[in-house]
Length: 130
Image (cartoon, rainbow, N blue to C red):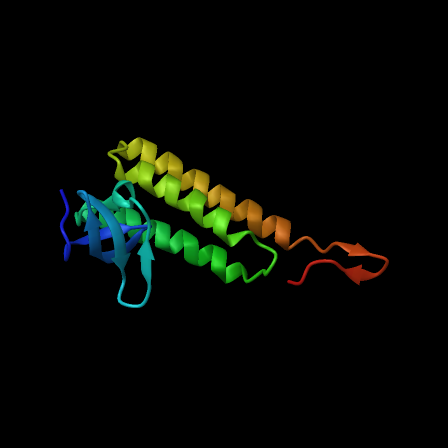
């Protein structure tokens, strides 16, 4: 399906395929960073307007998480969660399913913001930085 030099969306970013092995995408790059694995094919989606809109939405969701700027957040697991939901959207989900996933993600972000903004003090010491 893909070949070296093709542009794809991978982890909701526009990336170029660097390497392939046995018909599987094994390396992509965005001009700054390279990502490699035994098989990234299931995480690569063709350039379509639909996939671009979905990818832009998830990029925006990710930016909202990073704007929270809390070193205590588990960014790797949050990113994996976003990627799994992004893949579900790009894998042909209906418009209603995509809207439901967007709503779920927005609620997730809202819940994170509420949790990290809690002013917890123990013995007069603030536990979380805001």
